[in-house]
Length: 100
Image (cartoon, rainbow, N blue to C red; front, side, top):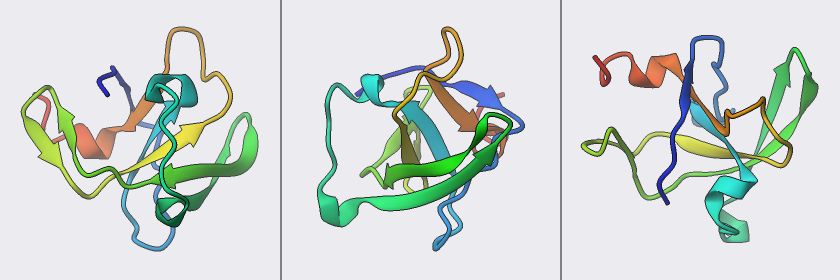
């Protein structure tokens, strides 16, 4: 699955047990992909819009800009629409050493 993310310096969501960063994606971007139940993690979040829990999973890999591969990141599935054209948020900390 390929999609674009907006880099967000205010997004610092982490999976609570591993401490690994979470990329927030609208469910519509995942083309109806449903991870196995045994791979799902519940990831609590708090934002200006409220608080809740995202279903999250650790994909086999994530490529950024087609070349840089990450294995230590979760995807958090957002059931609601984020904001306008933005469909995915990636924490700045993930990208700071990758995107120049």
